[in-house]
Image (cartoon, rainbow, N blue to C red):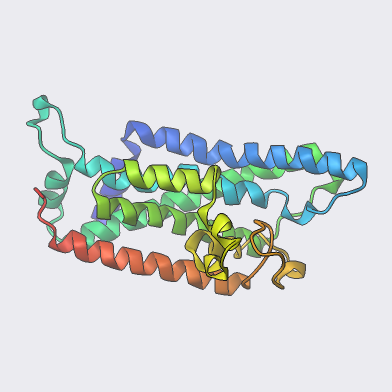
Length: 261
């Protein structure tokens, strides 16, 4: 428990974490607002088709904050300090305080998960009034089961960023790849146009936990972001399996790695 508290305090002391929290809270609401504006125009034109997805698109595409969180939780440990700090790395100090590498690994993972949960809840709190303000009486009620799926998606995404950064020992590659994939170009969506195996990639399977309604469970046109392929439970299990394998590998590497390597 002490290690967990220490990791929470350590994360909150990082300058970049406040940018992550700001992005995590506001980006989903901004995306949801833009989506709601487009849907309102479709309603006026009589061609509305996506009301059930209102709000959830922001939760699906606005995970940049937890990606930054997962990356910073590890990359800050391996950043070389200035000459005033003897040019060392924080990871050496962390391992002196918490002698068990597994305990340190778990404390970091739990800290990232808890902050991700709180950040997702805050994002939902901002999304609800935003969509209702724009859509008025047309705004759909958010379902608790789908919101739970969104929370799981945020946790799993943060842990994927955490695990990838731990394997690479630096944040630039995981941050760049995951940020681009979650905001600009989804590689899984592009690959889905070529092969159905893309629906088993973690981000694409994770969408199934909350993005789709009961009426969209059957597979539709391959490659569309808003077409369902798995059930919510199956999609969640697939993404969980990816996270579990990645964290298992990362834990083994972290346990065996020389800190100075």
